Image 1 (cartoon, each protein chain N blue to C red):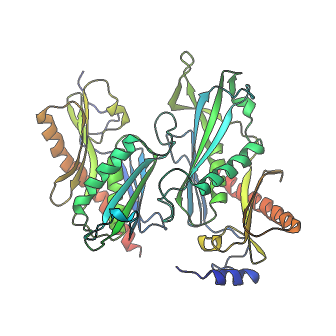
Image 2 (image 1 turned 60 degrees about the vertical axis):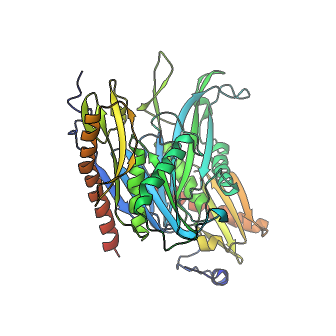
Image 3 (image 1 turned 90 degrees about the vertical axis):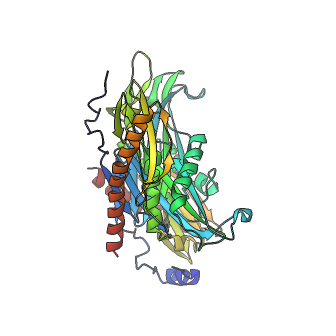
Length: 263
Length: 233
């Protein structure tokens, strides 16, 4: 479908969208599945409308960093697979993938969502490290929110693998019943500004027409743990306030959908 | 030690449970989901589209380009570093030569048909699953094909010829051979043939005969997925 950018911009000024959603409405269905990869310690497939993202968690035992000898660590990587969008190319992650991974990473890390001290096995010697890999299957716009939701779901579904007590080696074929020490549930919500209006969950066409965007990660207590502004247009302080309110309301909505799906 | 009963209790020529679906990735021109046992892959086809860099363009026909990739969390051990390795390069190459014989790209000069296959979880037989998935996705994309390509591994575990080895069988203590094959449905010709392990000539021929039946079962699943796809519209 070829859509005129002008149409989207004009519709936005009268609070309307091409697919008849309200400005603050997510696409449907929102489908959340866990355990989609038996080889991962935790995994999830999240679908928001036609947007499909897979996240997988792998655990490993490594030497803690020198400045945090009694803590484990996390790492987030995102791949914009060429399978998911004709515009994505093979090769090392480009700036879009790097930004996506870093925004999701900051939201989880800075919220202190994972109790890093509980990941420590022997201070200064051994600790659990968590790798989260985000893979796009179909990019239909709004990868930030979908990836953030997939990453949190994968973390929630993860279980430590069995460790052989004599050799210290991980047996990846067996999982324990112990979940990750996840103490908060931060979720990113990206609010887009198009022609003065604020909207969430943009389609690919809307993503091509925005003036500014702000990704706001909030946890259960509405505390903000990460921000990322994008786009070339500026935002007023008043707009930032409205965006944070909208983002934490929508994060609450997504968290409810998530916890209902996992029940 | 003779391998009489298979580790997962399958019959010698029985494949693991399969599941296939076409048209699972809306952005793609053709796509498929294919599952055999615990090996899962997504395949997407983009094209025919203009080929860059230009010097690769062929004014007589289009180019088929396969890209195989395992997701970082899809291996049965530690996390795999993303970004490809020698193994994924080789598999991409043999996927190309397995599918190319049936493709008719003469109507698409200077173009490329890209096939991307990504696996979220694996348990042996990934190149075969990738080829079977890619064939469904290419048919879904409506690219002219002279025949269907169906792929599965056959082999020999401790003297017994079997179809569709899983990870535990590949790792079996004793003499094992793993022979991934791709076969054309109508002509029963082989377009993929690799092997590692040890096997006698007699067992090799026996295994390849078994591959005829085994790939036919894959073909049925591929056909069903495509029929379901087009009866939806």
